[in-house]
Length: 411
Image 1 (cartoon, rainbow, N blue to C red):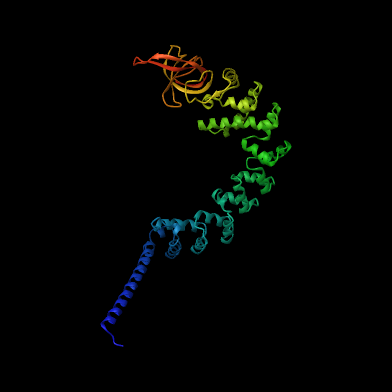
Image 2: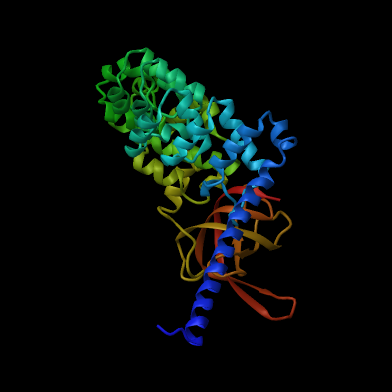
């Protein structure tokens, strides 16, 4: 075969391409070595200060270098991070080889790995538990708490099952277990039921489901007995209690204070208030309606006496009207600020109302209750108007209302 210049040029081109490829691969190899060397050349520095030998540092570096979860957003990972992870794993008895086994089996959360090993769960068992979704307990309980619960005969599956049913207090779980209750029994009764009250719940004829529901509301067998002694039927107690309890919960949220710390006093107040409403002739439904009428939360709630007064005067109390006219004989919730007092005793004045559109004016009289410049309460439409001469000299006409009940003042 005759070799022409064309063949020679083609061969040179292939050789050049091969040479460039080899050079590129060699460069990548050198870059990887350089990256490793940058970490390992500090054996007398940060790694050695942390107590690692050159060999140990190299082994840990090789394990951590290729775990994407341990790298920064740009794919890098500095020595400080590697040393921190290696230190923690070594502290809990991990060798680089063992740590790598956990990583290769999909466990990349260092705290999770440490907890699993400390409580005696090996990789195969951890994989089984994770596949069944039974590792949630690691996010709620400490190593010490899990160890304590395991000492009571609970498995990780048991602990996780309890957590999923809102048993998230290790002391409560221990309280149930030491009294001999099974996992299924604990779940049936629920975490709000105290194990020492089970006997009393049964005595009252409560099923686990019903006891659980009443406990969530905040009632105990002891509280229920108190209500029964005051003449309340069992099937009405939860209604009376829940309504007033929610009112106290809303008030405590407004004030930024939890009532759980004072639950005994709150329960006592709820019972006394329910008795007061009942003895004034109100049913549960009526008490709920009138207790919450008007600006109830700001007013401290309507009392039975005020409710009787409103019931007689108004019949019904409505939310703020869409129009301030055509309101004769009807009562409405009210909040507004005094623009001008008409008399020296401040029993009547012009008020600016923020609903349904800003800066609506109305005239209110009969303000006999203590009040300030801003008032909240119940007003009644009189069906007529009040006129006055504005600063501009124009005659202004505004609707006329009478104050029925002022429950809050703000000077």
